[in-house]
Image (cartoon, rainbow, N blue to C red; front, side, top):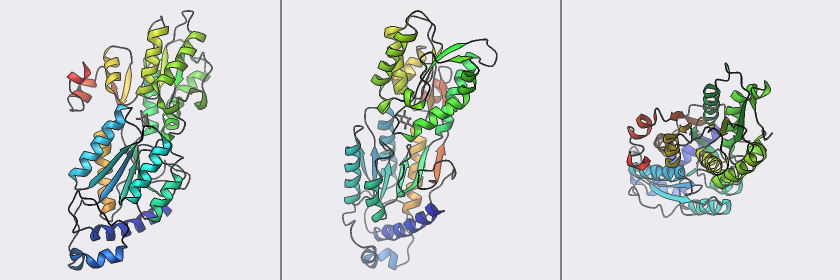
Length: 381
Ligand code: BGC
């Protein structure tokens, strides 16, 4: 409720700010972001005439974590294109996975007149201080894909259903290994993502809610013994890190020809590292490997049988939804949400919009990824 109230107040302030911007052509920078709203309102002819504000206008800051991973490039490009098409000016920044860089980019956005921030954080816990500044200036913040923790400056969260991503991965492994019928036991290893990314715990938690009973029953065996979130996490989601961890696991547990039946990988960058490691070190029958994002390299691996599945998170859908949210807020309304219980960032539940993640494998990728125009056939050759 506290959030709702805050959003309503923010929305009110923003309506005034938007009305003040009526005379500004869409796509141009609001240069006098520090001017008081009263001052601006008095100058606004549309407001005086009681005319209705239309969508668009104003500068939106979009902070993305890194260009290193394919998905964030797509997210950034889609967001920018859709915001521009809706009439906004866009300040899009990537931070090379460096927290300090992201903090200073956000600070610049705030100081250069951005009226709303869309942020995919590198470390969900590191933005509290800079977002205090946003709050002071009544700049609403939408956490994009990754929840920003312990900051009451966050107005909304837009993401894919992260827990569902994990359960889909777990269910896939359960079904592929036929855990309910086959005798087993089957050997599995677990790889998840960055501990500073709140999503990682949801992915891992969702998958483990499916897999843990089989581990408890002895049907699934984690030979490395590494099962806690901390031991299976991958700093920065880096392929190199998951590769070297898998190198060590293989040499300690599977070098003697022991079969590795499955590897739970929470996303595609970690899956890529695991595949690289297996190709270099493992001689047994190829395990079932999961992933997430449908990155080009991983879809190619799916076609080649090196990665069994991925989760398709259509970044176009998320961008469209976030632009809808931006528009609603910029027009003084409330953003559309479909979840008001799941994501508590430590200051309260953040109203969220969860898009649905879709299962992808070699049997449906053509329809899902090529026919939908997400990739061209050539990109996957
Ligand atoms: C995203 C995933 C992505 C991972 C690594 C997560 O927060 O939800 O789609 O694979 O970060 O960038």
